[in-house]
Length: 215
Image (cartoon, rainbow, N blue to C red; front, side, top):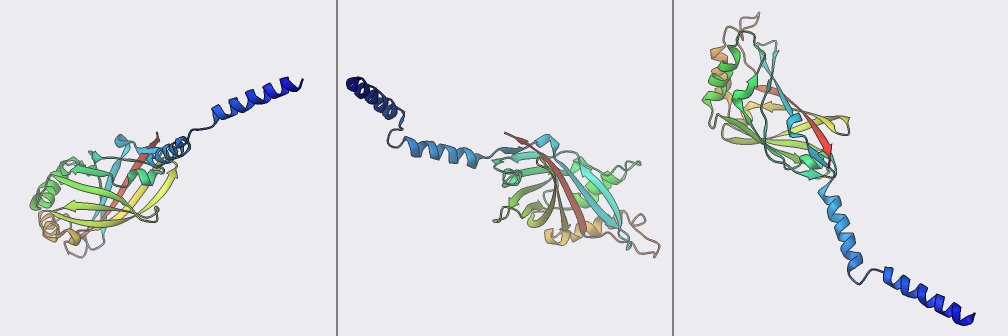
C-alpha cells in the first residue's frame, strides 16, 4: 500500500509539472491579452455616418439645413470604446454632395459655385476626429479653404453603438468671410429679412451621426 501511494503521488507531481507554463510563457500570454484589449472591440460602420449642417440667413437668423450625401473615410481604427475607435479617423467630404432639399434645384448649385467655388481647394472638406486625453472629450480638425482649425464637439449616446456629435463652425477661423460675402451677394434678395437687411451668418451648426459595430 505504501508503494502504491508513493507511485500515485509521483504521477500527480508529473502531471502537475506538465501543466505549469514554461518560463516566459506566462508573460507572453499576459502580453497577448493586453494587446487584444488595446486593439479594442468597436469600429465605425462607415455607411452609417451622416453629416448635417445648419446655415443661417437674415438678421433674424433663419436656419437653412442640409446634409452631405457622401462621406469617404480615408483612415479608420478600432478601439476599446466607440470614442477610441473614432480617434484618428480621417474623412473627406465632396462639397458637390451637399443637399439642402431645395425644391427649385437652384440653391445647391449656388452654394457650390458662390460659396465653395471662391475658396482654395474647393472640391473637398477633409477632417480628422480627435479624442481628448481624458478619453471623454472630443473634437474634429477641419480643413477648408486651405486652412485647418479645430471644432470642439459635444455628443449624445443614444445606445452603446450609436452616437450623435454636434459642433459650431465659425467660418472666420478658415479665412472664409470672402466666401460668406460672395454667397450673400448671390442670394441677396433671399437673405433679406423684414428689416430690409441682407445677411448671411458666418456661423454654421454641424451635426454628425455615427453607428459602431462590435468586432
